[in-house]
Image 1 (cartoon, rainbow, N blue to C red):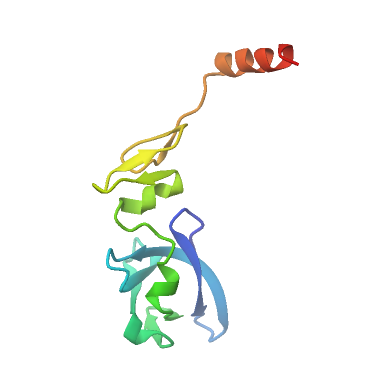
Image 2: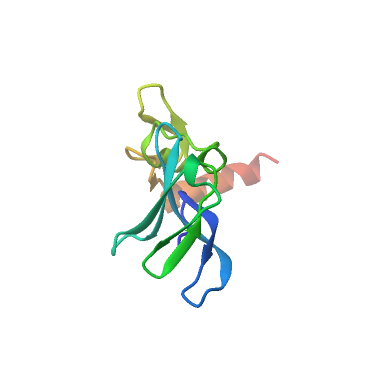
Length: 130
């Protein structure tokens, strides 16, 4: 199961037949007409859901997922930029991420941390300004 920036909870069925919800990596197509639920990346177990398959259960390996309308799953996702800039930046029209402060990388995947000395200096400035 996934808890990262591209994960989302979906209804699925366990090997024992129990219906439950779990969080998995979701990849939306740029057109938002379909999405892929990735159960296990290393074993390439995934399910592709389209609008036509909404409400249908699809089984892959031990898992079965109930597809939802892609417009609901993908509505808040910016699919023009890879990985939605990990929700740490804005996607430019060109498809390139413009990262928020303290994030860097092609997809804003790297967190930039302050050196300890700078944190101490900022703390002293904050304490003396009151």
